[in-house]
Amino acid sequence: MPFTQAQQQYAHLSADEIKFVTIDGKQSKVLVRSWQSKKHFGSVTIIAASDTDADAAGLASYLRTTINSRGWASISLTPAKGLYRPNYATKPEDITKAGTQQLQLSSNKSTPKYDSSQLLELRNFQQASLNEALNQLSSTTGLFPGAQILIVIDDSAGMITNLLYDKKIPTPDMLVLINPYREYEYLIDPQSQRKSIAEQLVAMSIPILDIQSSDAHPNSMEQAPTRLHLNQVKSARYYRQYQMSLDLSNPSGWEEALDQIEGFARTIIGR
Figure 1 (spheres, rainbow, N blue to C red):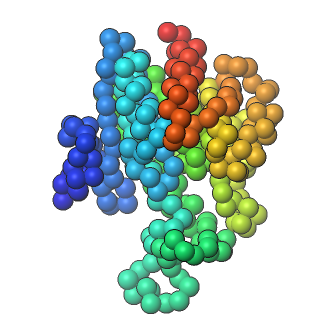
Figure 2 (tube, helix red, strand yellow):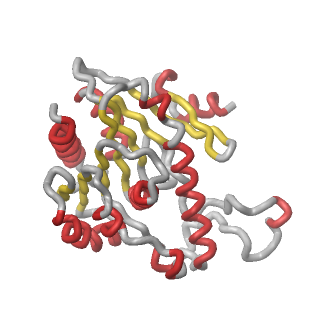
C-alpha cells in the first residue's frame, strides 16, 4: 500500500527513484537520484520546509534534479510534519476531550495560540522524526562514496541545526542552510528553549554555507545579520553567508544557489 500511494503521488518520477525509511513505525518516502556525470563527488541529502514533500516545489526540487549533472547523487527526505497537523500524540479515546489536540487549521481562521507544552511536544516530535530518518540513511549514502553534503531549508534548517549541535545525527562534510529559522521558540518556557541558530553554528566545526533570501520568513531575515556577525570568527572555509533571491518565480536564483553550493563544496573537498 505505501508503495502504491507513493507511485500515485510521484507518478512523474521513475519508480526506482522512490525508496522508504521507517519513522515511528510508518514508512516515509525518500527520493534518490544517482550521479549523471563522469564525476562522482558523493551525495547530497536535501530536506525542505516542514509539511512539504520529498519533491517540494521550487528550490528543493530544482536542487534534487539538477545537482546530479554536477557529480552529486541526491537523496531527498520527506520533511517532518508541521504545526497545523492533527495532534500526533492524541490517543483515540482522548479525541473528544476539549483542548487536548491540535486541530487542522481552517483557511479562514487566524493562527491559534498554542501553549509552551504543545509547542515543545511538536518540536520534540519533529526532531525525533528527522533524527530517525537521517540515522537510517547510511545504507543509501553508502551507495555513493565520497563527501556528504546536507542541505536544509526554512524551519527544517532550524531543527537540523539543533540535532547537529546535540550530536544526534551523523555529521556531514558540509552543511548548507537556506533561510533557517525557528518560528515559535520564544513561546516555549525559557528553561526548554534552545540556543539560537547563530550560537549553535558558532560551536560547530562543520563547513557551513548560509544562504539567505530576501523573500524568506521574517525570522530568518531578522536573524541573518546575527548569524553572520557571530560566525565571522571563523575562516571563509568554515562559514560563508550569501544573499540572493530564491522565490518560486525566479529560477535564475536557484541556479545561483546551486553555483554557490558547488563552489563551496569544491573548496571543501579540494576538487
